[in-house]
Amino acid sequence: MTFLRRNPIILALCLGHFTVDLYANLLPMAFPQVKSAMGLSYAQVGFLATTYIVASSLMQPFFGYLGDRFGSRRLASAGILWIAAFMALIGFSWSYLSLLAFIALASLGSAAFHPQGAMNVALASKERKVLSMSIFVLGGTFGFALSPLIGAGIISAFGLKGIMAMLPLPLAVAPFIYWVLSRIDARQPEDSRGVGRGRPGRLPLVGLLSVVTLVMIRSWTVMGMNSYIPLLYRGRGLSTVLASETLFVFLASGSVGMLLGGYLADQSGRRKVIFASLFFLTPVALFFMEASPAWALVAIGLLGIGLEASVPVTLVMAQEMLPTSTGLASGLMMGFTFVAGGIGISITGWLADQFGLPAALSMLAYLPPVAALFTLGLPGTVKRGATVVQEFNS
View 1 (cartoon, helix red, strand yellow):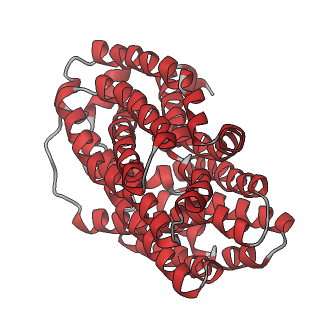
View 2: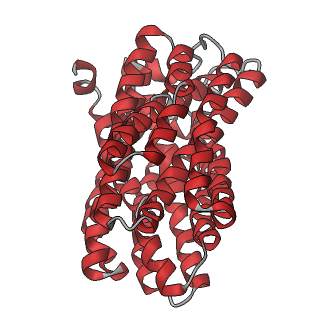
């Protein structure tokens, strides 16, 4: 793509996102071993996932604010190293509380990187904003998708301590990201004062509440499926390899959905893409729960496309609603709005303890069309207020 050749920074940030989310999604493949070794309930496993998600989510707006005020390169590069270090330490946990502490600390690395990455994509992209954001988010999704495959192989062969073998990747990527973002700082000396320099306009409260609620509901569905599919397959006597392959298809197809959603949103309209991608997913999700393993791969692929197609669209819309605080907006959308998803994982775990895991996951099938209804509160277009974007690319 010509616009990507003019903006290689986007591809570099995509690599950083890949590395962070490669670590972030190791937990689901670790859960079966942890559950057996420590004798945990589904609710306790769900609380581990919730701790990671909620801790990361609550801190992302704060790190986004810091990026707006003081610059982003140190936070982004340090975040990569931080999550890698503490994820490697979970294999050395001696109790449930120590495991919980390592997971909570690891989440801060993710919280530090994500708003900085999204903010700098906004800085680097002049044209095709949603597609550029799609490519950035795509890096994280590929990391998420490959993580179960890599994690299953490493954990099966070496146990949880084998995660240490992944450290060379972040040790190489973190200084590279620091160097890449220093180029943005050199070309944009007022980076520390935020992406947008225009006057704050009237706060689009209805639009912000609508997009936040939509993302919360969508995130609950995605995170619930991602966290519990390995346990669902184990309960049905299916292999860990098949579970990891299913998660890979789910998350890799989401990458296709992001690119498709980004392209269509730039061409045909954002609200249309969000509504169409979510409203019709209930039959697909219910079919997945009842299908044979082969057909389940088809269904989970369609679910991945539909659930993830709107991710870059909602992120760009939030940035444009808060043009003078793009880092904060990115932190809110990539962080705080996922709190509901994290809490939802615990709710799904509680429901699984009460009614069985298949019934609990079937309930998630009815959430996407509810999320789609909140497109009614979204603006059709948002004026671009972040004038730094034009200046950076001039």
